[in-house]
Length: 358
Image (cartoon, rainbow, N blue to C red; front, side, top):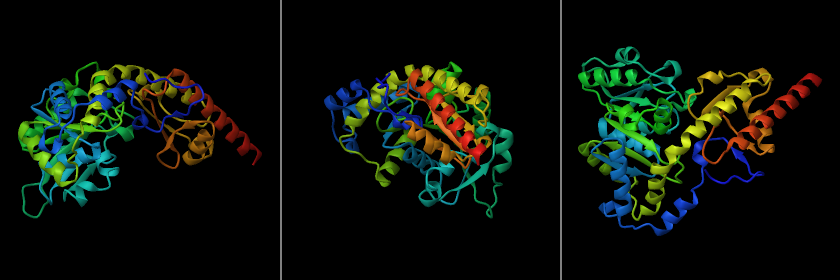
């Protein structure tokens, strides 16, 4: 875990805000490099080989971002004019600037799913008939853990059932597994086991695993060969990228060890916030490192609450008029969580007093 100064900001906006560890910085400074566009960067090659091994796949590819990796996956599996089935609140549909449409030429075909967990029963009616008047279903996309549903996890049997039926229908399944290691830790299973039937998987190095930059795409050799072409097409061909991959290697080996503590901190945060007047959430549903709460009962907006928290050196994300998201990570320790709860309590109390006077 990183050293956190007592007076430092408690930044819970996202697990993307983590800073590279001293070990990562040393590795970056000492990294052996080459030209990765020629596939000659030895550190990138080691990272890709290790990622493929950890997920039980033939190959992997290093990307500057998860959004680019998801886009390349869509482009690699589909043709323009196809549809991508996904949850209505999926990151790929809502927070990646409509790239699947603007660049890959595909349309999202969405379905609201309880807790963001699609089932085959929800997916099957969305699959287009094989008729020339319909855009054809090119891909099914799942998200595990699900960001906008509070870090929820796909049950293993649900994922497996979807993949089995999709394979029978001739439709590939791509997994946005940006936080798949969080899911693996929560389930007590390996990432290989919980993703084994998906045709491709993206996962982030720069979220809970703590690397400063980067995401990985894993799959078959043929799929990764196609993905490499589209990565270059989209400007993702990096040269001496081993400087970044060196930090990614450490994140891949060391980062998962921190995740149980992040999950414990998220539960502590949720339990603390649930006790506050006007703050609504079900702490029992917090399974990984993301906490959502509704502040409508405080009679103030999420933006107003977040502004007051920031004045107390606690950063949170307003995700809607009355919804706040807070994400635990390796740069926030238990003391930081307690500071966040205390600051939230102070803000709610102060806001409540102000409302009473009004």
